Each structure stands twice: as structure tokens, then as C-alpha cells.
Length: 325
Image: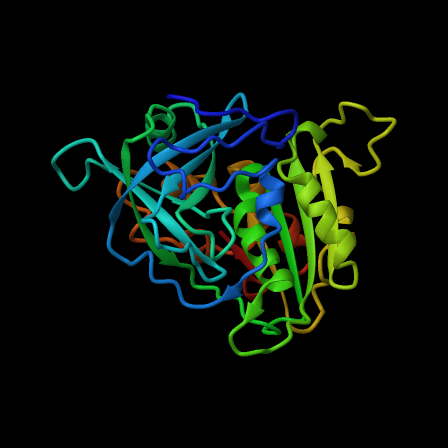
């Protein structure tokens, strides 16, 4: 893997150097958080389709020892656009048979109307077919992507209250929804009044990606956006004011919309252990989704076909109240 530039402490970018010959395609920001503050008008994107198309890797930006931002290039005049609750599916072929393909879903962190590129954040999984391939790519290599829409669709005021629980890089679909709800102008002209509650779970406070960006949103949109953190261990327990330890029933009860609340939904995305603990998703189901080579294209919503369990089930939520990315 060829590294073009590096992250400073946390998620701040020391620099974002531009790919040779394509200086007009990559914007330079002091940090990734600066890039995320772009506001845009939401409309139907035309860059991606349901058919796979190759995109060129332009930059690899390390975040932690096992997590990196991968920047893929669009054409000069192309703008990135994805509706909320839609994602990209990556594919690489390592053989000639249909089963010799690896497919994985990645929700970009790029704001709509960004010209010339899109970014995905990936955590390397030991023995993972796609992550091993991604972290072995060089600038100039190509990877296939296509757009995929999840069964759940976010629209202004569809729900009164949206709760979100994410772990690690599972924050990306939540970021997409939060940004669309709070900062984007909808074509319909409707003012979105949806309340958002986000519980972001990580190993330590140093592993929280885009913390400064989320903190700014919570400050600037305090009437609609509530932000909560939980870490397994606090590096500095004295100065860390948020939850420490595993997610508990009490933490979920305090941070998420109540089971008897009208027009609400709770969305979850994260590692297998989180989905099992919070929603009772069976390990076998998650292994199929994350480890199978040719299953994801057939069942993007497989996680939601099993009965709800875990903490949410014990608290009285129903399958209709919860969506598992």
C-alpha cells in the first residue's frame, strides 16, 4: 500500500496532497473535519448506477494503525451524490468463476456536491478478503463500485425521533443521515424537524473518529441533535465525562427514543459484537454478511430478517422499531 499523506493525532489531516496530473480533482483541507462542513443541496445523483464501474484509487490516508481513508477519483466534471440510506458496494474478482468475487458495502463520508472524488473509511479485518485487497492497493489501481439502496429510506419528518447506535467505522451511515438531516437543503423545500440521538461506541476516546465534527454539530444543532459517547476503557478517566464500559440497558434507555414513543426508529451499525449485544443478531448471520464471498449482493438486509433480541429486545422494542445496517 502506498501512502500519500498522513493523519495527525486524532483525525486531523496533516495535508491532503493531490494526485499527479489531477490537481483539480482533490480539495485540500486542514483536516477531514473541515471537508465535512460543506453544505449542499440534495438531489438525485447520476455518478453511480446499479452496475459495477471501475474507479481509480487516488490517495490512501492512514487514520490509525488498522484504519485508513481511501480516496477514489471521479471524472473531472462529476459530483459525488448519494441519497441518505444508500451506500456503495465494492467488488474485486480474484478468479474467473462467479464465486471468485468479493463484495462489501461501504458508506462514503464525502459530502454531496464534492467534485472529483469520494472517500471511504475502512478498518482492516484480519483475514478479510476485501480489506486485505484494499490495504494492498497502490495509487492508480482500480476497484469496482456500484450504488445500493437499503430497504429503509430517510426522508424529512418521516420519523419524529431517530436513534442511532454505532461502533467504530460503523458511524458512516449515521454520518450520512445526520449530515443530510441537519445541514442539507432538500429539493422539496421541506424543513426537517426530526430529532436525532446518536450513541457512538469505541474502544477508547482516542479511537473516536471525527469527534470534533460531531461535537460541532451537537453544539450548533442542540435543539435537534443529541450526542453521546461510550468507550470500553478511558485513557484518562479523570477528564473523560462520558460512559465507560459495555453498553447497558440503562445507557440505551437514557439515550435512545423510548419503546412507546410514536414515529421513532433506532438504527445500528458496527462490529459483530455490538450488533449481537444490542440487537441479538446471530453470529451466523453476521458471518454470512461479512465473510461470505458471494452473499452480500443477494441479501443487503439479511441482518433484519432475524428476530430482535439483545438489549433492545429486552427493553421492549420490536423489529419494526429497529434497522440493522
